[in-house]
Amino acid sequence: MPNPQDYRKGIGIMLFNKDNQVFVGQRLDKTSEAWQMPQGGIDGGETPQQAMWREMMEEVGTNKAEIIHEINEWLFYDLPEHLATKLWGGRYKGQMQKWFALRFTGEDKDINIVTEIPEFVSWKWADVNSLPDMIVPFKRDLYSEVVSGFAHLIMK
Image (cartoon, rainbow, N blue to C red):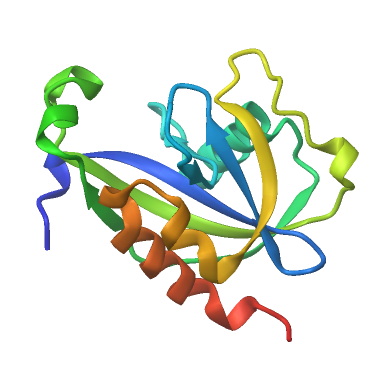
């Protein structure tokens, strides 16, 4: 078990549409084709669930969703060394995240990634099994854990 003090606390959101596809966004600050699910840090005084709703509004631009599941344990990923020394003042070696699965209750027109501080340049619905291949390599194991943790939610 990694030492939690070495990891920044955060949340992740797997947002399912009615067709069991998952929301992914292409990060504004990346030049590669990497896509990711919404995620972000937990601010001081916030619960993981409060942080999840805040990040949903900040990154997806809507809160039209309902929580359908939460992975009980914290999931960890390590940053590559060249990023660990730059991000978060070099304080953390990676993130520990609490992951939530949500069912989107709105319509595509409710999604607005042009928020006050946008994080994504574009977005799309993706097949859940393609998620690990869409993310940056250092997060692939984490995404595989998330997909496995929510696999029972996918309606056939």
